[in-house]
Image 1 (spheres, rainbow, N blue to C red):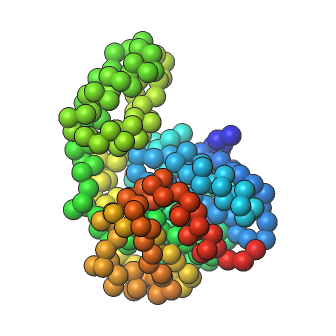
Image 2: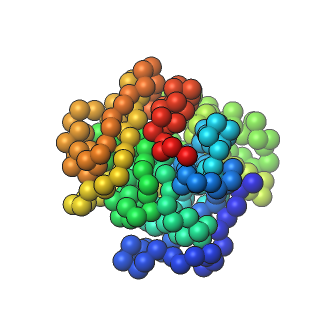
Length: 290
């Protein structure tokens, strides 16, 4: 069951003001699996235009194979979480910190894909005391703007026009057709279409396209940090993806001196979907003993 954190509620104190800066956290919709054990809970963070559901199969597999607790959540402006005009990694990090405080989690293991990977890295750099270790899935602490076609996809999504009253399947078919000239990959179109939802008989995008578009440069870049994160880090890329390359290694080493970089053969950007078993094995091998 997906839960939304009530505004202002907390089981334990919020992150210190210095960590929160001037950013106001939004209450993230989230799901909890398993039972908290001796190992810190695993926190799974999805990528741009995704939702907590992107990691549901991974979460179930991890709970089944190693036990413990696994959390999935919707980032701000995604899924069932609230919309906000602010869409920076500092803000997304504060959201996760707020949720961890609410749940009484004082130490966690972060696994983040793409945008979620950058959020995980920022959280670890801001609050290393909260992060036992982290896995960044197919993303490094550098700019990725040059290899992204998402601005064109956002424009195409904004231009989709779906008449009210259509069935869900008909609406999706119509939206798919309207997106096809810009978003030529059918698999990617189906991923984007998971964000098309019916509200009072009309179809809208549940992602906040305006905020994402306005902060797109922030999402594609990475904030400046000077103090490294001292814990173990795994950068887990897909061998067929350009998102982690040798040009990223100096910055990875500077910010994450205990980092290991691995590539899963035959996987593209969505590593956990392309090579599920190999991904699960890599995660399990990186986890601390129970």
